[in-house]
Length: 378
Ligand SMILES: [Cu+2]
Image (cartoon, rainbow, N blue to C red; front, side):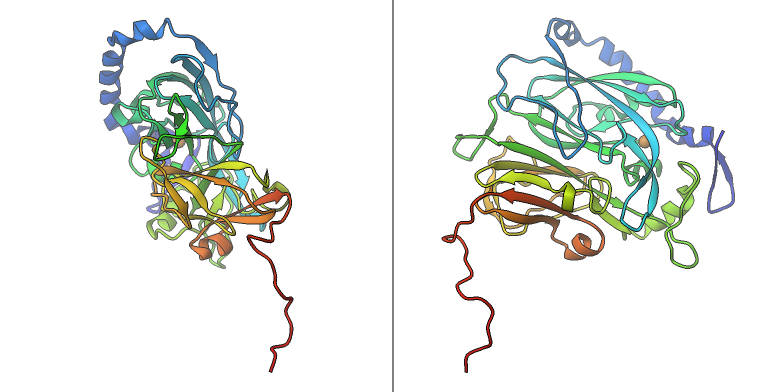
């Protein structure tokens, strides 16, 4: 039994923490009986089943851009792990709540009309109750009430992908535990492609050679009396102090894929001149504004929903907190591009920078240095 010290010096037992969400328990049982009575479940039993092997971000699982067969049931497994991760080069730590051990959790890919069947497991070594709310799903709490798992438990949820687009998912165990878990890394994304793939505003097919998934994460790390970031012995021990920092709404870190520098230098994303890259940007809690320095968004689904025509030729696009967006760009020049949250304080000082290393032949027509720096002529 682990204990959590609150700001009021009240010892909260693990069981107390777990009952933060007792109010939604009744709703959960109500929804389960309705779901079981649904006739549609009979048809689902006849559909082909595939297991989707989830991979760590910034990569996406193997998938078809255009579906070559009818709707199917896509089986995925997410295992929840409370684990200590390092979030910057100075060694700052957080006890993250991680789906499949990564921040953000892995991308799940489906086509419109498919069913996503998730087995959600929580390691027995965890301390808290967790669940999952899929913004891509349709139904009470995005599945949140139907997926509550205590340490050592597993649950299976199935939902039909009826809205195309990129969407976030996140833990939502109730009350303050919702933002607390989300800003401890407990979020990820789903991509539901139209069955016939992506299209421009005129309905012409759009394809990508590479897709990268960037999960932006804001962290709120408490500091000690000397201003140094505090470290904790176990998951949840930071609860009261973390809530105090969160109340101020100023993150100490804004990072891509779990840590400052997770996608820079040796770990830069890669592409070649001529490659068309789909950048999926997810932010489960806070607004962002991706910008590719030296490039553009050729086609951008700013709200991330593929039922809308993409905007073209964008400079910077806006990601609303609690959503994911997608931008398609064909690289025309080689070099190191910085992909940033163009609040440059967040990009440079808080960590929200990725690099894309692009190989290929430079095109002087698009840009060239006409003369090297020299003293100004009188
Ligand atoms: Cu959680």
